[in-house]
Picture 1 (cartoon, rainbow, N blue to C red):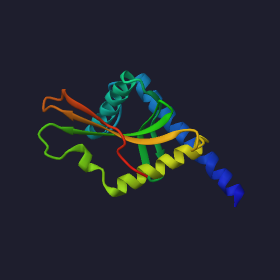
Picture 2: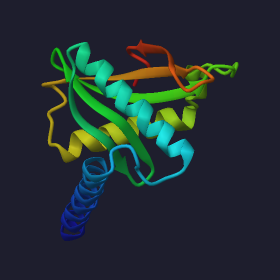
Picture 3: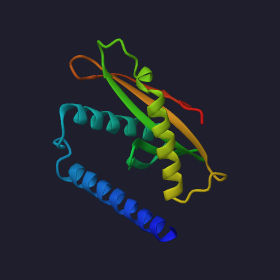
Picture 4: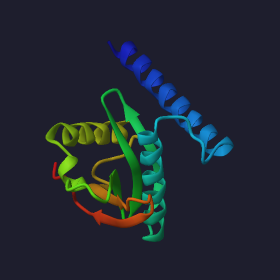
Length: 158
């Protein structure tokens, strides 16, 4: 059983490594032309803007798009001794739905599960760092321009 766990740990590390490597190559060689649907490109744009916004606020971005089997964390950041797991949501202006309302109970559970997996894989001691879940809500105007960025700290309670 321990041999299987070791194999799974090495395998998941390799998958994460190649996913990050592929994302890096896409950003280096075609920063404005990443493959994917219009929805994916809008999501990547929102994540880029959220990362820049957090950097301006003094956060250090540790990782982007951390994925596990059934979940993903858009941004992992660090500030003031806390590891911050950030969910980025974007909407176009005329919609009535607030980005905060789009985070369902299932999504919350997936975020928490992915955060615990991140802590385990990075071998962080839970006693040494605080964990926090934040939301960056981005609204775009109808013409595609940025209308508003909202940062909500302490989105989820474990």
